Image (cartoon, rainbow, N blue to C red):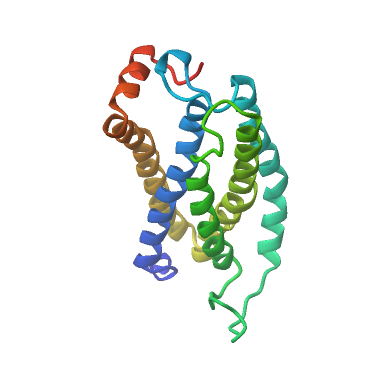
Length: 207
């Protein structure tokens, strides 16, 4: 069939694994970021930001992300990369350089978000988290997700190939979502069993 030769198996696997990473990166912050910065009072956890400001952090992230999506999409559409001795990493294509560099920045911000500068309730934590989440959502996540979503249709041109490639992508999204839901609970139970017991009894991660 014509669709079978439009992309290689390794490319389908790569998209599958990439979807897992994208889902984990997105869902863990969305599900646990608010609780981390403003946990319920009876959990005994550090409250880094007042509950109202904690919500503002993620609103800022959504607003900046909405503004950056079309910019990065248009930028990657018009990008043409060519091999050159001046390029640090010679990655060809108009989508892959964005995904490569964006994933590096996404790793940094995804880790830095969980290390607020003040060990207690502080406006400095709000400013820090807001800056990190804006870079995470509006810059690096957009650099990865927007070109990644455009990469599939460019790899597969026929309807059959797109369906097959879509199965790889859907599978990765399902696995990534499952891991993002289950893994944090396991890590919290192992690393902070006392806080986990209190959190499980309250049945809520918000104050």
